[in-house]
Length: 346
Image (cartoon, rainbow, N blue to C red):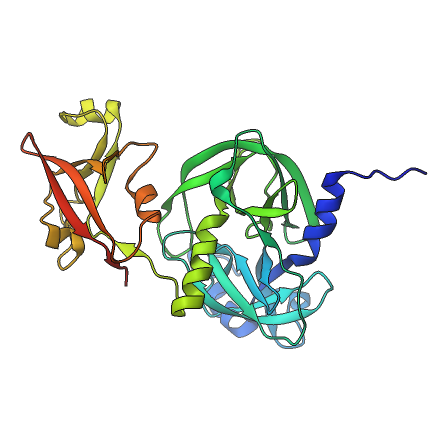
């Protein structure tokens, strides 16, 4: 019997050892309290099946995927995978060993988290690629543990789109947040695959599996790996993830919205609060110090146009704390420039 010798098979064998399962466990008594509240809301009793409680009195409530990025046990996953409060996170490696994971950092902007497992073992780490060099039509492989049941699930596809933006919940307790700069792929990403690696055909990780569109076929999204590489660098240098702060609320608008709002330009960012009681410019922030005001229309960031396709968050993601940027804006029909020095987001 002849064996298929393809690059895809070589890549799968290379990447699979670095992929892990992440189990989210809660103490049965804590979960019972939560279920009691839910029972009162729904008017019917919800109980934990006895067979779901392990010998330590823990219940697995959810799961996800991740991948090892350092042989000492550093793991990348999604922030939403490790968002449960009062929970224990357990990592199951490809050789079926189980470890309690410590959450080292959660990215406050991107859906990324960094975990650590303590062991004397040297792990096989995934090789990180460069998400700035991606092209439409490039072949990709998505790795993970589909539905938390099917270990080492791999799906293949192509890059269907770049720099996509969606609004999705990153944590159960907070409103959905806009996620920008995403990689779109037709490779299947199912629940449980979240946090697993998206690789190119040579096994270099180019993204972290993050989301799929409910009710749509072959539309999945991954976070570019360069965002995670930056988080890893921050963690090594500063012991935490650092992000630059602007300090104003805004509405990114296109031509249709411009006509509806009667604005003098057809694209840009309008400085405005979401509600009447929300301040559009936050006191004590770089935006206030630079003199930004409610109603300003931001048109350029360091001379580059602010558009729906390349908005404030896209530019901010590529900026550094302490960097001084120049914003070109319209105020009262007159064009002006404001210099703003980025500070660390607390």
